[in-house]
Image 1: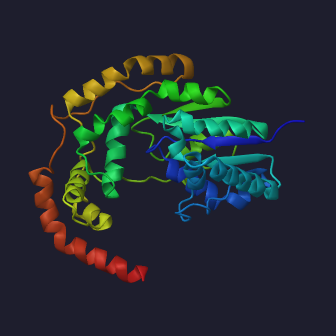
Image 2: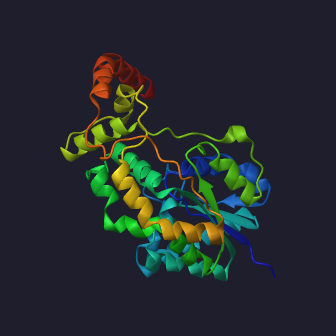
Image 3: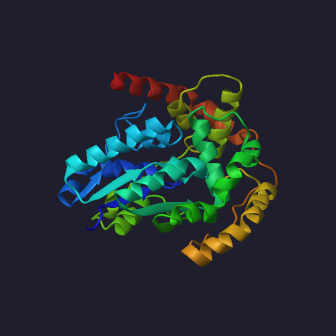
Length: 311
């Protein structure tokens, strides 16, 4: 008897994952008619987030916690009446293989296909630091963050795919700097699901000047409103901040890994480098601060009006 299919979307972060998850959740009933079920996402500590955070947390928890989560996933899938299940969580792309090993237990019930998007490592680091700074989750400077030893295994993308290839079919996709808005369509094509290009959405990150400003505030334990901060730097277009020296170090570190990634999985990143100075960004530019100063009053008004409508 043929096993049901499990499509496991594991990220990585900052490659359009939120757009994919929101599309899957929003169109769940339509996809169910096609025999595809996007598993329930309301068991986590953040039930409004449309990814499987409860699965990610259970993988790092006790054996009993994982068993409960696994059974909840299976029960939810059985009630759907579908032959295909989709689960999605960016954290599954982390290189904590001793915890992710529990996912192998799903092979008792499913034929597993893993889908993963990869962004060139220097761009990934910048974007992930930017996102964490926006959420006041990161107090390290960009330079400190890029040299954090915990992150290095995550940048060796070939070893991440080696792990999942042990018990699943792996489909890897290149996420380039011009891929914003294309992730939903790319995912749908691999999963065999209908999707129009107009269903993609773009999550615009703050500029790097804005991100470093928020990072400095976090470091000084000063609370800020991300929406208001983005309005202050609305016209700033700085996308990169690693600097030539550190960027080259990162790309040299992963060169062998990327060569193998291309040979075995067809993932190939462009070689173009952004125009920037030698050193990583440490403070917003004077020009960006000057513009932010003059935008302060209208931005505050916009924020106040947004608060009124939210209520």
